[in-house]
Amino acid sequence: MDRIRIRGGRRLEGRIAIGGAKNAALPLMATGLLTQAPVILTNAPALADVATMGHLIAQHGLTVEHDRDSRRILLDGAATQFEAPYDLVRKMRASILVLGPLLARYGQARVSLPGGCAIGTRPVDLHLKGLEQMGAVIDLDSGYINATVPKGQNGGRLKGARILFPQVSVGATENLLMAATLAEGTTQLINAAREPEITDLANCLISMGARIEGVGSDRLTIHGVDSLHGTTHAILPDRIEAGTFACAGAITGGELLLEGMTLDLFGACTRSLREAGVEMIQEEDGVRTRRLNGLHGVDVMTEPFPGFATDMQAQFMALMAVAEGASMITETIFENRFMHVPELARMGARINAHGSSAIVRGVKRLSGAPVMATDLRASVSLIIAALAAEGETTVNRVYHLDRGYERIEEKLAGVGADIARLQG
Ligand code: EPZ
Image (cartoon, rainbow, N blue to C red; front, side):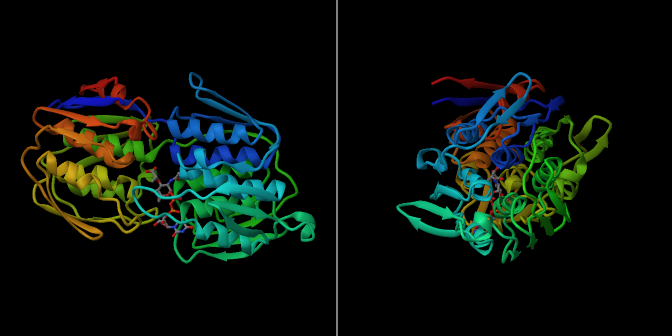
């Protein structure tokens, strides 16, 4: 199993190209199931999760080509089988995003329930309830979601519905948004998630002929159409990758130009980083981040966009571990997203986690140590800490990292980090 070795203490300086957003690429790939015309995605990141989604959609019967050099994904053709098997779904929960498109276009789907996840139970009840409101008949058996649209109803088509989400869900919003584009009549998604990746998905669907109003708001209105055509769509930059590098630069007292990024994509993270003492400036070709003087402890609470992103919580905590003073970090989205705490503590961080809150008391210096990656964002928080730690850190189980970060060791080495991937 690969591991990554970092020797801390180097100041990061330079430009980092920010890739296409993982959490946009995955739902965007599912739009290929909504039409048999070619869907081409550009600025596509070369990530393990993107490859998994590609295998999943290909086993449904579509042609899927991912050219890593040109960063293009082509999805073409019609689905010929409608089952998403456990061995693929268990690797990546976002597989559930094929459910809405398959039901909308083919009236049937058999998708494995995603099962457990390190950061929380992550049920899919909101996805299923919304689809049932649109006329789908859903039953669960032996770990699978069996979903059909009765032939007698609207000729086997989903029907528009008014769906109120009791809590904000990115995935449920995406699944139902895609399903509604081909439903009979109008669908309203109320209390919809507003993440930039959803706006990107809506814009792609509109370019395929979908009729969607309220894009970017928490109330989406979709007027169903009979069919969608193909498109070519550029995936928006990955705000979480960019935020991760902003924290990495800041913890080393460095200065980075995050190429392709725009400040609006950061939501509340911009304010928190600025309060912590990190300058964030929009320039022509990206966002410049630099450490002004010392780092200060800042309290954050994770919330749906435009609040502070839960996917940035672990990275920000690593930064706060060496800030002056204390900070309180509250995780409101997932019930078990503090797995980086004990690993950061091994490096000398002073963090006291109680339930959904953690008090971080900044220390002067962290010290390098062998640490274990447990999930995607926890593992990258260890790398951020290691960049400023005294001595050498080895991060084990880096396959977690490869799910969401493309060549992270190359990108960090390119701006001065002493970092290497050790095979085996
Ligand atoms: C997406 O997951 C992202 N993944 C996550 O990023 C991100 O952390 C999350 O949104 C929140 O922003 C992708 O986009 C592929 P949710 P998703 O539905 O859609 C509960 C990363 O690191 N919930 O918004 O699964 C759920 O348990 C990953 O890149 C239900 O109760 O998140 C959670 O507590 C991690 N029932 C909360 O809502 C449901 O039917 C938010 O989940 C659905 C969700």
